[in-house]
Structure formats: structure tokens, C-alpha cells
Image (cartoon, rainbow, N blue to C red):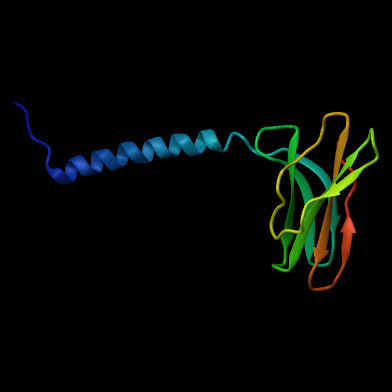
Length: 125
């Protein structure tokens, strides 16, 4: 004998399936953890470093943590021409920049808005 599911039971079933699919999606998304390149620089209130932008080994972002007055930017150096370029100062993280191709290197700069300290990290390939 078949029994009809009530509306509330149908909604609970749909909600359970949806939650399961979301959990699977979250597990899959967490598998692409950014690669930490380093190049750290630290002030009294801030910490800046370079990580990959997603799963690409050729694109990276500068990240700053600490006080809300901390800013970060990237410098890109072309090893063939000697030229350099900078991203704009940013709170949180910079735009992605290209590197790790044997020609371009990156380093991160931080600005501590409380102490006024600024400084570069080490170059990374």
C-alpha cells in the first residue's frame, strides 16, 4: 500500500538532499587551497605575504592581516629587462599578478597605518 508524503516531509527530504549536495560542493571547493609563496614582511600591527591566486602557479596575490589600517601591494620585477611595476595599495589583498615563469619575480610591501612603518618582503619566483 502506497502512502502519500505530506508537504512537510517532502520539504524536509528536499532540504536534506540540498544540504548534502552543498556539503559535497564545499568539500570539493576546499581542495584548492592557495599555495603559500612566502616573502613575508611584518610590522608591529601587520603581516603581509604572497599566496597563489587559486590553483594557478603563475598568478599570485599579496595578502595582509592584522589591524584594519594595514595595507599591501605587490612589486613585480622583470629579470630580463630590469623593469619593475607596482599594484595599487590595498586593504586585505591585491589584484593577481603574473610570476614564476623564469622572467618575473614578486615581492610584497606592507604599510602599517598605525605605526607608519612600511617595508618589503623577500623576492619570490
